[in-house]
Length: 190
Image (cartoon, rainbow, N blue to C red):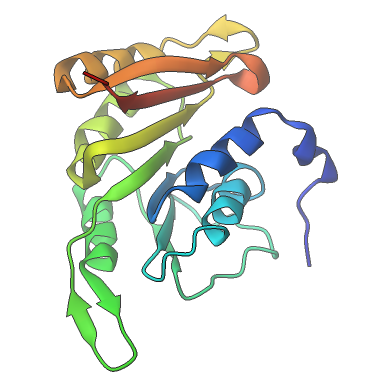
């Protein structure tokens, strides 16, 4: 049963999110909410990725997912506060093991894609970035929704820009200001 609204297909940023997800073997979606928008497109993109060891992890502080959101073996859901180390630790445990046909092998993954769409406040996002960088590598793509709310620059985006500057490995770019904005932290090309 699919309770997701049909009009969601018209939002221009969702196909962009899907394209980035196609390249991700490990994707972390922080702020799943009802799982009807970006989450759906991250999963849609990852389904196109032929990798056998792909992992999607959706995170939210309360479970509001719609009926259509059925987990496949490579999909995981974590209930927890995105500003707490305990939530990051739950995700690390999922990324630590990969199951093969005969055994469980210890592997330490990091995310190729981290999507953040939670509370749209500077301090909140600053805390999240400080924590979730533990699961990033130098080529991780970070996507952020709501960087331009109602065509007005969202101050939370300053936290992203400061994080990028401090990292020295990522740069911030606005992908679109439409649909409340989509921003990206991408590796700096030298």
